Length: 147
Length: 147
DNA sequence: ATTTTGTTTTAGAATAATTCTTGATCTCAA
DNA sequence: TTGAGATCAAGAATTATTCTAAAACAAAAT
Image 1 (cartoon, rainbow over the protein chains, first blue to last red):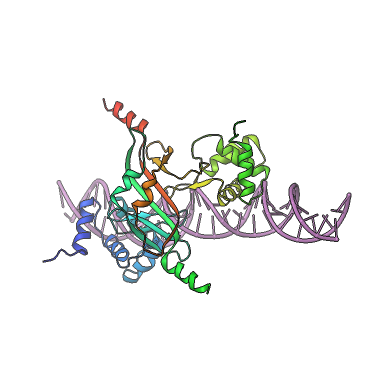
Image 2 (image 1 turned 30 degrees about the horizontal axis):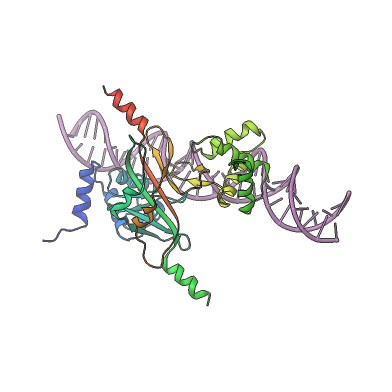
């Protein structure tokens, strides 16, 4: 049978990562998986409350931290705005539209690591690429509004 | 005579950028230029107070914002830590040592922009590359401490 | 030179995101 | 089942940053 990408995988991911799988963590994770955008902790909280009304914002922060710590999700930061969270574990960058606030995953080519030079002896454990600009639909909107 | 890289240049940069050159802005800029590290607003404030005891933290924030806005300096962010400021305008990335907190400029090769693919119609106005890891001297220190 | 207009500075208050604290609850292993 | 340790919830606390309002200043217009 085909590999299910949903629960088993997340369950495995969490247990393998060493963090304990609790109902709250599973629910936060599923709330994050539910949509392909990059919600803030507050947005995750508002979604998570629908299926688990007793959950608190602090718990959502705890869960997101634990999941990030365990490598099950990624925290994404742009400038000083609220952190956003991303369940896509494949290495990728992020594009932030300064017009509409949308956040997209950006696939990276393997050539990326050849694009920088660190002093010898430096160990790079994490690379983060953030792009900012105007997304396709905002560019389009501006173009037509100027006719 | 050789081009002086200091005052005339910064003066020009500020006036050309459209922001008014005030004593506070000049002093904040010079405090930032004084050392090649990447100070936080609070660190700039503490340094700036030495030569201008009446300056306030809010003014340092205002000045750093104005200078950033005018393109005279860059704001550098890593994770959710305090913003840091960088007077190096040549495009470059940043390396953050998670052991000692040092921040280094990382030269970028021109191949960088070929390393990502944005959907057609997307306009990228700003690219930011942040690396995290262990710097050379921390790596060295760990190596010798394990003997 | 004086007034006007708009900008900047300052000090302190306010805000917003996040973290901390505490006691209650839960989970797992012995 | 009991005990140790982890997690949860609620709200307080913290921290970086921004805002507010009044005073000082600068440039332009009279």
